Image (cartoon, rainbow, N blue to C red):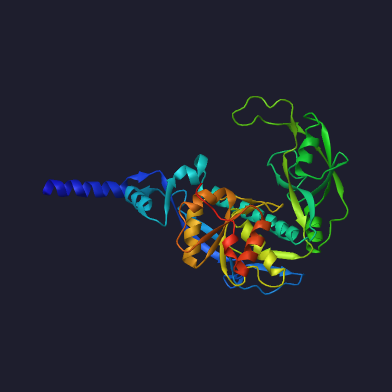
Amino acid sequence: MLASTLVLIALLCAGVLIKVPYSEMSPGPTVNTLGEARGEPVLQISGRKTYPASGHLNMTTVRVTGADYRMNIFEAVYGWLAHDSVVVPHDTLYPDGKTEEESTQENAEEFSQSQESAKVAALKELDIPVSTQVVVSTVVKGSPSEGKLHAGDVIKAVDGTAVKEPDDVAKLVTEHRPGENVTFTIVPAADAAAAEKAGRDPEGSEKITIKTVKAPPAEGEGEAGDRAIVGIRAGTDHTFPFEIDIKLADVGGPSAGLMFSLGIVDKLTPGDLTGGKFVAGTGTIDEAGTVGPIGGITMKLVGARNAGARYFLTPDDNCVSAAADTPDGLTLVRVKTIEDATKSLEQIKAGKTAGLPSCSTG
């Protein structure tokens, strides 16, 4: 008995002390985009008439363990057995040795971009015009553009050729050889920001000449050849006809895009999209209103049902995995676009749920 007890104690100690390369995912907070968070409205719209909206259009989240945290054997086994958590390889959440700070920064950037796309998708769904412009997204430190171009500068033309898409910038720059000059026609970021705040397109411009350099080889590849670069990444920015602010702290990633866009649509149209029903959902959204897949779908379903949701708007590409483990009392509604979502909400509001597009396991 003494020997068995000692062995048991040793195993218990090993289970606590031995760390395993796994992380845990569990249901995170769910927030009503039509309501408030920390005492202020999640969606704040000014300069345009808005309408009261009842019911719920909840975005959902997943809580994950930190990059520096290592589970022990007992925690991993408990997570595997528990229904309301998932244990996954650590590299799934933090690939390539990514630190928690790097992951947080990346999630914050994705969250910011998802808000922008949600605004554009919502206004397009309502046929409200949105002006789009090409901007400097990032400037590489130590590149020829550092100090000459800045994030937020609006790029009107390259070498006198007007640009309409971010890819146009790279195409025109690479027509040069390294060492040659390229001329950007820009509106400085400060002027562009002032114009956006006033709800108008930026006026005036200035020309900046930058000498190109040879592009470094991509990781894992040989020489880059004579491809010319100036050290910037171009992106898109939008000028909205009125102000839309999304106030939600401590949330990252792009998966709330669909629910933000639906919340904006609801607030800008008379009546309720949900008819007072409790609807939750998830999904990325692009500017054209296309809904994309997300991670942690099963945890989001659990979190939504625990909060009281009866319907869950589910990206088409997540439908199979969602249908395989759906909490009791939660109806999955398959969506591919924001238009699909608004049509399904009309059916939910009218009580005609038998015809809702559903998810299946096959």
